[in-house]
Image (cartoon, rainbow, N blue to C red; front, side, top):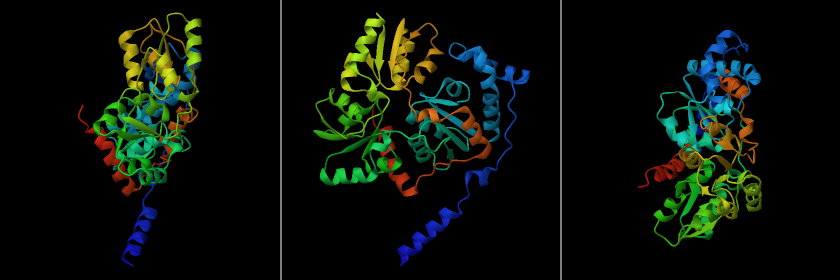
Length: 360
């Protein structure tokens, strides 16, 4: 009977909790016109993107960018933009850019009350897990992820029941429910370190079968896999890369480890999004091809104008649900709040923090 009352009380609290719109209020949607004031206010932004956004398109984008940058200050909001966001978002309105975990960690260090997550849903969950007292909003709740959706917390519990004693590592590209059921998280850049940190012969690395296979090729630990994949990265083929080398002699090809192993083997370098960006900025190749979501090449191109980018362009349909217009709507209406059950969030936070605290 006591347990029943406790559950009823929790449900009542959940129902009565104010929404973000109730807490912060709604604002009037600003008029969007390309005035001399807007042109002046966004001049610095356009300097960053003029190599990739034609001047004729700028008057259509600048008013929304200006409105967002004005409203986020009124809302005490910080905008997090993943590397796969389009340049107008990445360079125009973002306060923090990077990969999903990097964004979530940096958001904990801000004084902002509100996080606008320009990425997919699991990223917003991770931000909420690490910043439970902040309001986390996502401009489109439908922004999902084929990889994250390939596994559930129930799947992990079943996996553990069938394989007792084998550590289960989850890639950060998973839901809070999955993170809560795993021993530790990893990123594409530290997956090998996490795998070897257990000092055992066998581990599961879920859910990306290609990341697991690529890590397994670098270690004596047997890396067991789950049959999940990123719909963007799994479409690349080794033959495609060989064909591009014939068409573009001298091109340097760098790949993300979510690609199939045969693709990684054909590349000149493989690494996380952050490592790929660093590689291009450091090496400054004459021609480069990034084997990943193609908006990232656009974003890096604006910072490396001397590099010629050959784009095999696979777009993530989920990331592309996030647009300037939807970001503005989110700030005006304070809608689409991402919440995580506190019990799940606490368990998931342990898995994330174990990774963060892992000694280099």
